[in-house]
Image 1 (spheres, rainbow, N blue to C red):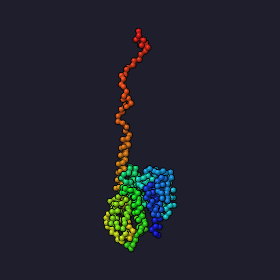
Image 2 (cartoon, one colour; image 1 turned 30 degrees about the horizontal axis):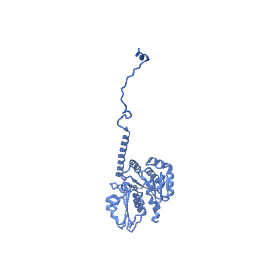
Image 3 (cartoon, one colour; image 1 turned 135 degrees about the vertical axis):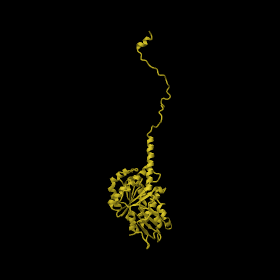
Length: 350
């Protein structure tokens, strides 16, 4: 089986606007893809997508996760049928959705679990965290989603991209494609070692956070920095928990001591040589707790500010009660009027 034929084993389901954007290059490269959205307008922006799925009765979720879940309930069977018909034969599906939005954030965890248990294929999650200049709703949605993702015990690798790592969020999508495609295409192998298809699938099926890096032939010395720090992913926790490492080297030898010192000692390391580029994947790490707690703190700060502002808005517009309408009326002495009869008036003339 050629490398191009292997691409048919990996499908991509993009939910929401982020999901639609990140699947573009994968579809162009030949991977089977489905783009799903509650907004017809958002679907129209994904111009070259072959397989578009609109959640019936949806007109956008405006970051409302509850509304998103209701739409999923109404369209679940249709979505599963779309995946079956447009991605026949896939053994791994990457479900891509933003943590901060509405449609994708609300559906991601549920769809991941349903696809895993109903279609019996490996599910990988690709999501993205909001930058540090977002709003309360984006942060709150992210916290709620990861509370759901943390409980999943039926999914494989979770790639957590981070918009705080790059000024251009669409560039993050392009970089991720370059990383993952290099791994899945799997152009490597010599007598000194080959990262084979079963090892790639083991990396993808390993639960926990995953990180990828890809560098050119002359940049192998920068690989550790690229995998741990200078990347597009949420910061790695410092606990050095990693289950598996996959690495493809452009050379024939690979020294791993410094890598282990930086990221931790894995259960096993899969090594490939004579690759067209230097590629490394860490699998089975803990979720980015430090970064997520930072987002939670920003949500709480924003919520307190919004609440305080709303309380202030409830006060009266003016502090005093000046009577502008009558302030120029002349003050006339009030005469006490006595009630008189006609006889009283007559007495004045007698």
